[in-house]
Image (cartoon, rainbow, N blue to C red):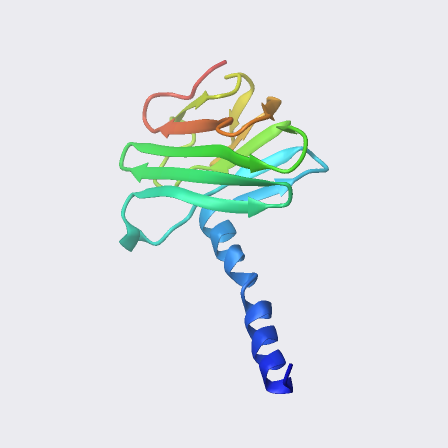
Length: 155
């Protein structure tokens, strides 16, 4: 292979992996496997509208999908496993952060796809769900819904 052709291919190869980081940033997915935590804080440009749909997120050992919706009275995040390369995964804690327009003191959190226990909203808007969640097959996942002004969920 000629030297200029090799350089052209290497330039493309080295720039391509960086594009996956954009999906991580938009989906806001961060995993700490040592602590068994997943943190999901989607963020997308307002010009895209109030819904983020079918965003693929590629992480070591699995592919997931993030859906999110931000409306005046609802903040919803849906996380679904799409593919796995190994054993089932589990998380001891799920975290997200409320939008700035939501008052943590009066926001109600509802969760589907995992037990609705040990849900904590900190004064800075950090939401923590201290519950073990197992994801073993495609479409396993969970949905977190926040609605302001209804009183904090007491469980």
